[in-house]
Image: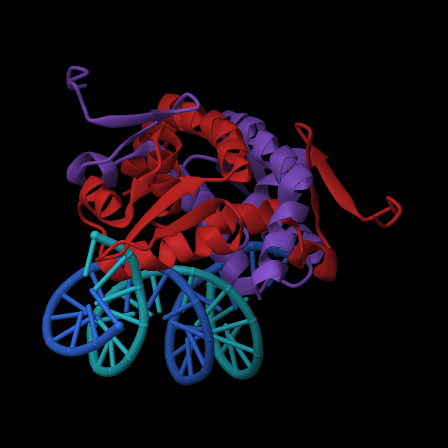
Length: 132
Length: 132
DNA sequence: CTGTATCCAGTCGGATACTG
DNA sequence: CAGTATCCGACTGGATACAG
């Protein structure tokens, strides 16, 4: 691990982000937020946090996700080590998806954000309505 | 406000999200995540959390954001009540941006996610490299 | 100084059809 | 059952030029 060199950062409410070019491009916070800020990832993570599920179970659970997007979402989550994929060589094939330990741990801070959203979401909605 | 009807939800690590159509579309958690999951919003929030700043100060601080994106980011944050905008009628005009109380409060759960990212970001990077 | 207008490439996400 | 392939509209974000 590189020594903790003095990377320019901003500090606010215990939150630090690098603000200069190369460092900011690799900022793990921004990286995670963009991973999780897409349309379906968090929903899939939460569903898998409840229990491991098969592809078709997920598709039924989410209900209005397209097959393509479910595949893409699962692939990217798997690619980032948040979800595991297990193929059972039945006929036809069955595939089970589950959270990895990494994925489970991510639900904790997401939970904090969900709590904030539940409390302050109405305030955001109100602000939007107030300005058109 | 409608009565708290039994909206189908999934529970995982204290995290609840609606999973059916109309409810999920209005899910405040997904809504907040998508707001914050864009390229610049969190960085701007963090900078403003440190201190109120003028437009040009922000642009210098971020360094590689385009004028267009800074404007758009600030407008959307303002629109959602997270940032305030104060115009001083000098010549030429100066404009100061600051976090609202709502914006400040958002930094708290974001901080939890930043902490997680700092700790587990390397694990994600490793997972990515392991699979190409 | 603080923006707006225009253009343009790349990505996101949905619909549909097809496959082992 | 669990995907892949293709097409396509919409949105994101950058570059550049112009304006109050």
